[in-house]
View: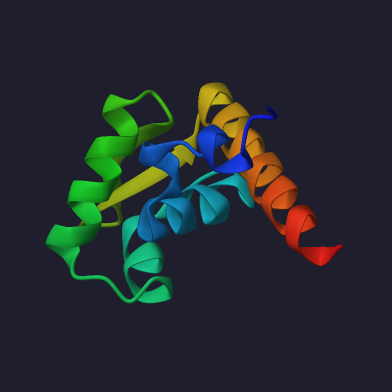
Length: 101
């Protein structure tokens, strides 16, 4: 019996908003909290919780600082995050391939 592609989905990565955070972070060197909040249509608290989960899993780095006088938070994807995202995409492609034929 062959393993089903859904067995390769990562529960931390696969959640819709966390997948969005990782894909956006993978597209740039670092991304600002406000941009993610707007792009993913999340509240600040909800986004913060998802970022914390990804950071705890070692998939995102968090950088806090200032832009002028305004406090800012930036996130960037780690090497482990890039690998987890690539594995998630591969699992999704395998799942789609099963249904395309």
